[in-house]
View 1 (cartoon, rainbow, N blue to C red):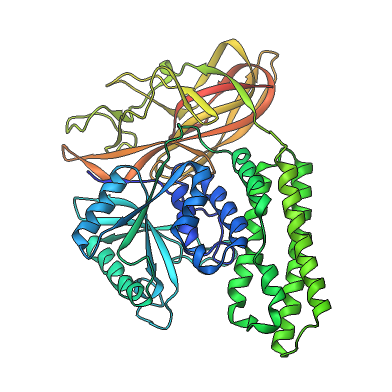
View 2 (cartoon, rainbow, N blue to C red):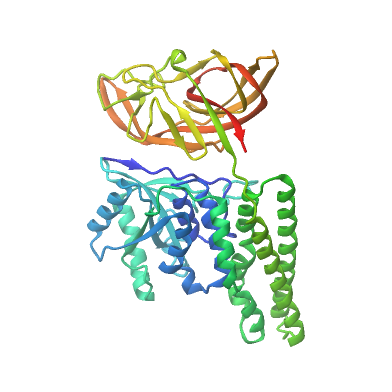
Length: 520
């Protein structure tokens, strides 16, 4: 069977100036298990990367340490020189739901401008997230394809999907392996995968990650302090790009994560102010060092000590901020009231099995979804902070194609939020939903629905991902992409909700709605 593991493009992620192109794909692969894990892994890598040298930065032990707080495992496979075994290992891991990481050289990538340029032999990695046994192809996530392609985007290192043949992938690995062997690097003949750990199924949160960071800070010592102290003995400019990435570019993922953990706008403002101050201090110090290096001037011991103390003070500010934020617990609990949409269903998206005679069709042109064991129907379906009751009966309508339906709530549910499980087809859409209250007042908001065939466009949570089927000429086959359902929560005016009016847009499909109140 073919399978694609959903890994987001991370339009809001980080470029190579903040997270290097070895660890960035690992962060994206970790995001398969939970989108936020991309940001958690990037935070841990940028924080702890300050304390390790180049060799350890690429080690198995270091990557294992970064994944452990996420309850993820770093698996190592040695395929020897058997490339057929390599293909089997990768396809088997993907079938298990384990994204695969392949370490390569830039000059081995046929789609890269540095292809066959043996002078450009930097280490890179790619995430393999799909395998199609019918045409023997793999889907990879490549962060260099769109680099510098979009003027105006703050980040252009998006993880773009590329489908390549098994032979192409084997050639990339073969060319890289020859160089790894010549250089004596442990990457030779090895590939890696990421899997869930054995510590239950509870997902990591910003609270868990920040508490782990506080523990790590007890023995935290920035490597750049030693570089400053040895400044007059080393050729500083030889590694300036590495220093800029590791010690200044790293600030963006660190402070982005801390802002994710902030409980309110005041804390966010404090974090942004701290980021600006720390970055200014560190850039000024780096500038002084670079200017003296260009002029070939030595820096006097007292001046070096001053720069060292300033750098240490900037690091203390980061550490103190992390410790301060570790005391915050912003977790919100919601009381759920499930709306029964069964009588409003007018479309059939799911089929129980692959049938040529199926009538399921979400698009009007034969595309439908394969129902699987990961869908909980007719009972509370919990996924992270969301919970829905999805009404489903095999062979019956199972979703609302929006045509302005008016949904009356006779119990007048008290709610401050409304969560929707849905998707769109033939495009992504934003449409108005109207909420009416028992006192006659109204509240409207714009609801966003991403197309089921792609990653979330509007920052929804990927709630379910599974097999998409295509029926054409009385024959049903598997699509080369996944089907997806997304969840999103919308704040509404607090009150007793008596009616919900859906938009007029048949391309929007709603599978379940939950009204919610906050529980302290």
